[in-house]
Image (cartoon, rainbow, N blue to C red; front, side, top):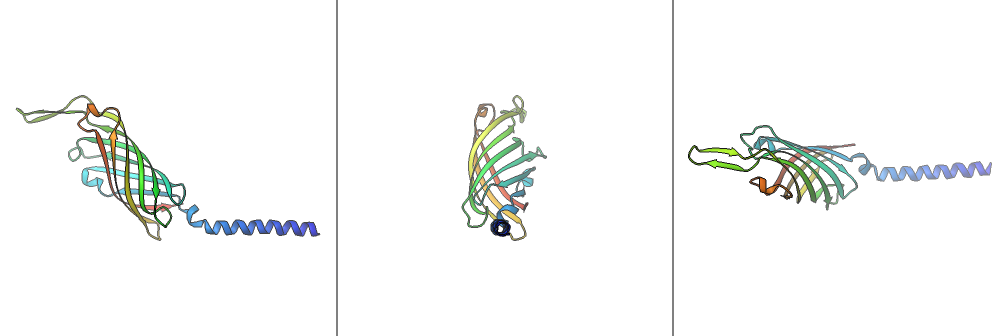
Length: 182
């Protein structure tokens, strides 16, 4: 009887300890995902959506996708896919000021040729695909309901085909709204 009682008390103490651990980690284990929409890009005739997965209180991995739908407003960039890593400095879980490092697979129009006599612009060659690397910083605020507001800016350099286009750098600007979920 004493062995069974000792075994049950040990089992109960482990389950009590596990329950205490789960209560303290409830905030961190329940909100590991975030999806957001950039509110600036429609002004440029484009659409950008992002997904972020939180690794812990201070870091996350994410990916964003940008695509132009109105070529008359944005005639250089076609689309990009950009994975990133962020480190947060805020006191709350994955919020406050952050820094990010990113990569970007991008499609940009080729070099432009201007014909002054006919006042025409031609694109030399086809779209240029390139990889860019860069860094940025930003700020994130989360409400108790899980609504997220984010502002960020990032700068990067094209790595391989910058000589085939009129650009050698990329800039990411964001003013986003999103939602955090399990």
